[in-house]
Image 1 (cartoon, one colour):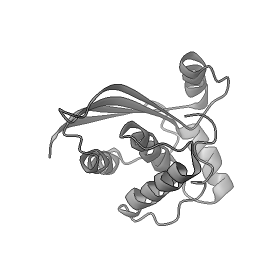
Image 2: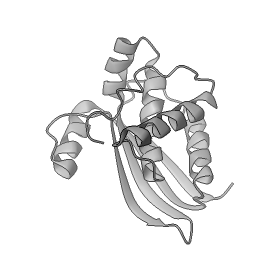
Image 3: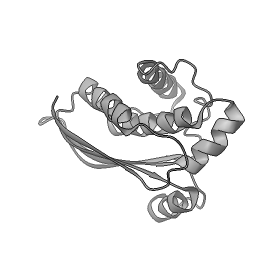
Length: 158
């Protein structure tokens, strides 16, 4: 489709995960944002690993659901390089609280992190509403219509 490479590394394997379906969805998010080339790396890890990264890079001493790191962005050349790191352990635990499949929760984290990389924010209430709408829009493309817990996502710094 374009010159964007998607690499997904599932180090934890606690939650069922369809990498090909996810990569197609991420390509769509990137294309919709005008990204034509670059690299998006997605890492699925457990809580201890994401906790270490959260301390190291953000100074937050707790595990989190998703971290997103923009490595390079050039809108003139439609380039984006970034990393989305998610915890499938957190997804497994929160999905049980919300009563929906952990794979949906995990996918929500990946979409959320990718939306951050393409410019969406969720710190101001209006921005958060727009981001939640985009999450719903993209997950609906995969037949996921109810987003449990979406209003809680990102309450810890991501």
